[in-house]
Amino acid sequence: MNGAQDMGGMHGFGPVEAEPNEPVFHADWEKRAFALTLAMGMPAGWNIDQSRFARENRDPAEYLSMSYYQIWFAALETMLKERDLVSEDEIVAGHARGKPKPVTRVLSPADVLKVLHRGGPTERPTNTQAAFKPGDKVRAKNINPLTHTRLPRYVRGHVGVIDHVIGFHVFPDSNGQGAGENPQWLYNVTFSGPELWGPDGDPTTQVSVDAWEPYLDPV
Amino acid sequence: MAHDHDHDHDHSELSETQLRVRALETVLTEKGYVDPAALDLLIETYEKKVGPRNGARVVARAWAEPAYRARLLKDATPAIAELGYAGRQGEHIVALENTPKRHNMVVCTLCSCYPWPVLGLPPVWYKSAPYRSRAVSDPRGVLADFGVTLPKDTEIRVWDSTSEIRYLVVPMRPAGTEGWTEEKLAELVTRDSMIGTGLPKLPGDLK
Image (cartoon, rainbow over all chains, first blue to last red; front, side, top):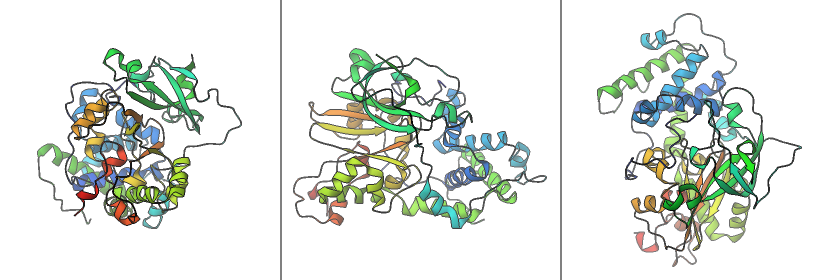
């Protein structure tokens, strides 16, 4: 979706300001919101693309006014409510009401390190051949789905070069809608500064995105 | 619950969030969906154990051992796993070597993708609008925000992390470090130098 999360090339946000000796978390509630989000992935069964969509799918003004973990927490509430695991009444009351909907698995302390270590690899086996090879010129499609996509606006319609073939990976545009992994060939594609930004682009700069085959047309 | 007291300086907007987070944790715990001890362990892992010192060890080994450097640049995920770092948000890692001709810089314009097993959780600036908006259109300007100026003929290659590939920059080994141990080399490797928004420390920077 063309939401506020797609920030590449926007102006007006000011300089990057790093915080010296920054702590990992800035408040206790951030820690709990982070951990709840990770832990609930197992019983609730959402995938990473669905959680990204739940974060970006909001009024741009709201997105830009929220802190990072506020966005995470809002998305967590949304995803739990969508799956009838929690109701607004329960959050307001601060207590569970009624019988909990059964879930198959809960993250136990004994499993935490194992689960983190395993992660969620997204490469899948295939018998198909990649359509593009390194050095091929491609144009990023001009697509504007209302649903989740990982093709940023700033490359759409622009011509780049295949740097390398990454592999065959889960396709977020499908996975983010809960419509299956639908894996596709994934490429690293480079664009020159002037190709992306015209005369305002720095000719000594190259920008790459990782782009799935359905995002690309041959040139 | 162990976290019933918090050390947050109150402003009302945040208090509202704090209350809701606490309420939700209670509800999910009562329903048996989460085990608060598992939450504590998740937090402890990313607060205390997983962080940029991991990545610094990887880079220091690459500087010290040519064979390791070759493995890291060829296929970083197993090379990094040799040191015990693997898993969530680092399932597919690619190492990017800086050279006098090319400087690599990593961003995630769409969210906050970052190689957790080697760098930990990202700092606020990495997830912020100023960085995500300008890293791709004005990387030299962003580097200037960090006090970094590169030669004009150094190509800057910005990697926008739009897939599940996670990028780790291997900065150039500073001069004057010949014969150093891996441990000492690792002290030169900063978090920002592995994102590409900074350079490693110099021998004279170490006390």
